Length: 350
Ligand code: GDP
Ligand code: MN
Image (cartoon, rainbow, N blue to C red; front, side, top):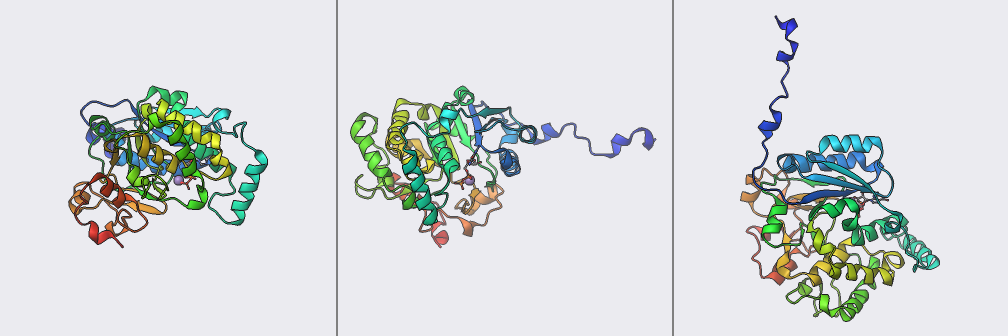
């Protein structure tokens, strides 16, 4: 009798998790991490859904959310329903999201007014500067992050275009990688006019932190005199938290922070992380994930190589791939490391 067994006519959700399958093998001590505002909830939801569908539904890694204000109930409800691992919500302490005492407020305000007039992107924003300083120097030291060794940064409104058929955290660990990227490009020089002066000062004061066999050739075309503005785009990162918590990295951040460029200019966390990765790590410790297909407005990384795209069920248009175009620094990364460029790169140069 149908009336007595209505549930039999609707698809049962029993067994759905088994159908999806859980990837075998060990898990690393790793987490996703997203800095977000409550108002970002639907944009971060889209990102999470894609990361889960393409990767994490089979791996169930945790997700840490960080905010300078308390997360509201909607944000927690929506995000925790999407993440297959455990979710954690942290509020950033005031000291990590405010002007340090040594900053001259008048000078910082004049810079913002001037940058607003010159129409420099986020040039007039205080919160954007706190965000860049936080991502440069503090996210890896939040209490919730201290529990983990590896992180994967996810921003609102990103896209993943291909399946991730292995564990990138495990790949990093097994191949002794510390920092990774999918997109690289030249930074707007207006936002970092004196960053390299500050870096040179650090190199002079802390020669013990500059490793041999680093990636200076990625950052500079003249052996370190000038910065060529190349950086890895930090809205995607898979990296090692112990490295960021090391004395070398913390000395680097604190030295830059004292020079004040997060407020007297508009230093981004991308060039800060990239220069650190370029100088404080051996070049073999950096990794380019060709097979993680990614979009963050306005750039796409779509894997070079048709076989990769078909095997990983990618849905990006290879013509959109930014890697080999003139404004990307990725071919420079390949040259510095002596890597052969993937097959088909010539067809994606314009
Ligand atoms: P863009 O990618 O450089 O254009 O900058 P976004 O607006 O994407 O900001 C970078 C990251 O910081 C994203 O994860 C944002 O959600 C986050 N973010 C930016 N501003 C704030 C803020 O004022 N508060 C919080 N909690 N997160 C922020
Ligand atoms: Mn963003």
